[in-house]
Length: 145
Length: 476
Image (tube, rainbow over all chains, first blue to last red; front, side, top):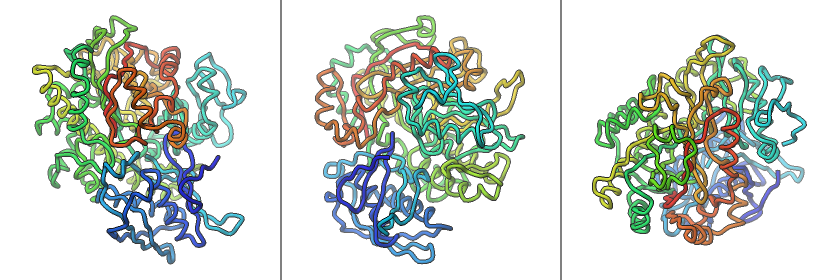
């Protein structure tokens, strides 16, 4: 599958027919997870338009790192949907498949953010959390929008 | 897709033989051009579906099939409970009971064109659309439970719409067997402010013109006339459905090995129909269907209110409401015997032929209306279910045009302002809070819906009744 870079080198959005693929890179899994969440947000609106002025705490746990990655993105989606917020900064730690994170963002301003899509859920399709040949962690999956 | 992998049954049906773990064959309805243009992933995904436990007849892909997650979009598969058949959250998807409804009116295109800009503006104000929008209806816990059990019937009893709308909705607007108490608190929280909202992406409300009739007799039964203005609404179960999909995909993916099910793709997450998990998912998913029914019913009410202000006494009668992301318990004739099956349609429309007991009397002779949403610049279609459709694909047909390119590619190729201007030059007014959203949904990003419905007709899935073109498009 061809990857198409957008925003910066920490993450990419890659094409999927009707939906979007998100991929985050990092020195550790937590950093790759955070960058994948930035990719997901970038599919909605440019990250630079979102002020990280309000913080929201999330936590999740899963039987393996791939399911944890899906849980993480779905936790972000849930907070976006129920709080009517967009997030641009993600700080998280992972210990023994337990994730604790802080999402920083602001309330949706339709005029300023002009969100183009609404993530419905992170899927198990194209799901992978692993090291690449350069030793970087790569976390990716398809998000239904 | 490589045509050499397929056995050509006829110009519109192509078959993949049973290989590897496949329990049944796979069949794609397409002509050579559509098949060649389909992503290889459609073939891979439909083979995976054919390998699921308890599948009967075949795994089908409709003419608009494209790469989905788990199932292809445009995938149809039926499972027999007594053969260990499964129900799959991946086979329904996140937007449970996403669907299309069409209203016929007593208005002409000229009536709409005389107020086109103002009507578009007022519809965009009245219909909450896009990320961050909220509905005006907020449900408490009891109301949420009643809505999830009652669907559109709840909506009508609550003052949204008319009693006669209900017989024009699948299941008479109320999906039996819903288990509202099993729906999670998170799913309910996600829905609390989203009743009567359109959503975003490819969801829309359009005011359209009946441009061409193909089947005069059926058009008469559907009360469609040339130059009539009609209103199409495309949306689903909103946040509640998305959250149910999220939760059950996870639970089923993790539980599958415990049922002895090997998933070639974890997104095919499923459980035996007769397991506790399978039955619970069915009950929760049916509550999601009711949520979608209620949501579209509220949007009908909001739309009628706007039309009443412009055209006092305007009639917006519901022709029909179809869902295209569901699993339904249905009886079908297979190998000469009636069988109880759980039919998954993901991005595919139920298409019952003439005489089906589920249809209201006024539609019984003509067959079920099959509503096909196109892209915002081209056309949509009304088809009718055929007598042959059951044998062809368990009474199923296509649901839309299907994307020809990704959102990313579309956003690179077009600008929202450019698309909006070009459509305006063709007499179509588009209202959306997101210019990028308009670019991603550019008509050129979709396949030819004309070809899709021609193939559907030639393959015996449904027959063409009317072609509709947009005048006003409200998008999220």
